[in-house]
Image (cartoon, rainbow, N blue to C red):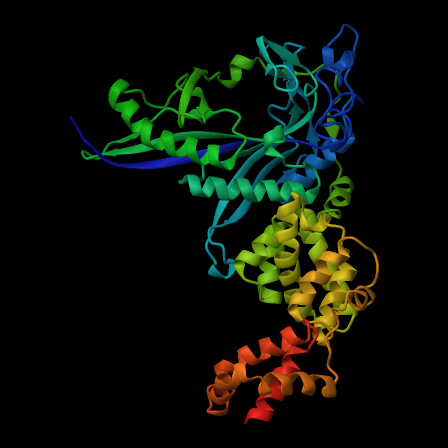
Length: 510
């Protein structure tokens, strides 16, 4: 029997994005994917359309269509001039109609591609083109709750239809991934893009985005034959850790399954599995249906949608600069490190907050590149530490971009020192007052008066405890001067201008 020579991984990805419109896809009932309604009690966001009561008729949500177009444009897709709605028939307890309104052969977005960066440094130039086959708009199903609201144990399951009918954009990639790292990198990029576009909050624990990798392997045997194992679809993964774990597990297990059963890819061979996060393995759920099993046909209750070029261009005009492109610009234009640029583009609100701070600092006369670096330092050091402690974003601390710009200006003028800048940042999180006024009120302004500084410096030099250090500095060991500077700072209560103190010490002891 031929032996396995090598195994190659092939992965395509289906991503379900709950769109954050205020109302659902076919009715004006509130949408739980909108932050305003995400904590609603079970079965309170329902109406006759959601429940599929006799005589209830759906009407398409225009905002959901435009959000879908926006995502499609960001992914380089063509936007359909004509698209329609289809019924996808299957039964599940949380699907009231017994079918899902979806799109089959005429999706709203199709034929796109994304150049996925494969390195943290965009100047590295490593990218991989990931094809986007389609992005179609449909409705979400409800969900089954296996514990009561609040976490109380129950001996049954609750059908919660709040999510039923929420607008759901399903993005389907080509099988262009050959490692779990690439899939996770793309998943992170897509989540960030959707958040920057404002089409989804992207909270994966709440189901705003669910990832379903379609995985198989190509086995090369030592006699030259190529074996393609059956595709396995892993359902409803809501963390990057789960995505990576499920793909890596299947990569290792599929060749073993082939050795046991000899099954190869073909009609009816696809299966659906779930991911057991505790055991770190996939679990068989069912054989996967083929398209004809869903009995697709055009929905007779919904009109097709004609999308003119003027509509497309109007949506395109709202397309912001995408986060991965901002990250590259921050590195190229501002000289930020890959780590800092990534941190500043990881959250939409923090990124906008950072850019507002740059603008405010630049208007105060600080050169733009320096303003960008100083703003990054303040937000990622002073801001991030406090944000982590409080469990909020740096943009939600209460300090305004113009106030951070004011701190930077005070530092540029040597009006305050670095330790005072950190303290001032914290104080400004609690007030709208101007930075200089707050610094003066709390005695954070550096003393630059030559006479006062000279008095402190002379006291430190004359202190017998510093005699050895003074001699070392006089002997040319300038590294020791830091202890003398520290002595002056202690004597002044941190109010002395450290740079001026160091220069005065050098002049006196040289």
